[in-house]
Image (cartoon, rainbow, N blue to C red; front, side):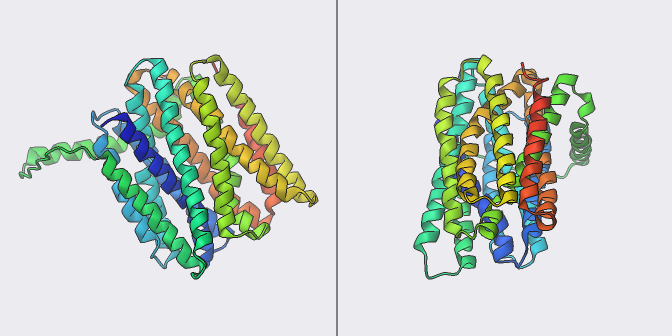
Length: 407
């Protein structure tokens, strides 16, 4: 499959998952009679699925030659799961589907990144990884703008039905992505009973289980990579204490409409799109990677801390500062993610790069999972102000750890 189709399919995935990430928590509160804690738990289970999928992908991707079929199945199954989520009545079944969705969707990013990392020299890889994430970011922005426009246009439906429509649109986008990634070839499946083949399948399943838990054991990594993985966990834990519940926070604390939530998230994504173009122009300069990462972490920790302090002091401009700060956070994302991805790939060989990328995503998702469970408790019992302050502290702590690993 050509690179353009990969990029377009990843753009559609960005549009789909971006609007889904917003309604994932909102739907719990609006349609399933949940609260901020149960909303954050839904996000936590989605991230748990991402974690399981990331570990699995780190094992599988180094063992297969063709990834297009895997990506196709991931998109298709994700599309079906999203449709089911819009019609469940039980919050526990919703949690289960959230986990399943997280597992399936987590394969696509590492698979595409791995494929690009083997497609050319270092300069080509850096450009194409940036292009892949640029398409995804643009898709995210368009998806959220469309979601805001849709919710603002449809006025004769209640919020529950509006969110169901968003689920449906998200599903359709992933369905189109699956079609784009499907390679047209004749597939012949033969099923012949064979004791020896059954034994081989059983042994492979047992080996996969062993490798799955082996990946979690970071003691096998060298010291620098181990510290980097831990720093990534701390950084994403701190940031997602806030991002996990941000949509619900906007509705509950600032009393804004659902369409404004979509609009603000779209502005956040638009800031990221602009930054991707800037990163693209500097992608050949490895010396800037460290500067970008450190600058982003300091900026993010300051924004989080100031929002928390302003909420605690109840200053008049806290709402405006929060909106502007959230857009700035979107702008900083490419300056963090792209250099971090390249740092990870530079520390490993081509043979183990798939596993390392999986561990990178594992650290991110483990941070999101932990933060999601903790965020609901802190915000519900201690308040949003303290939540932002704690989040800013952990991002700054991650920055201090990251300084020891950057090359």
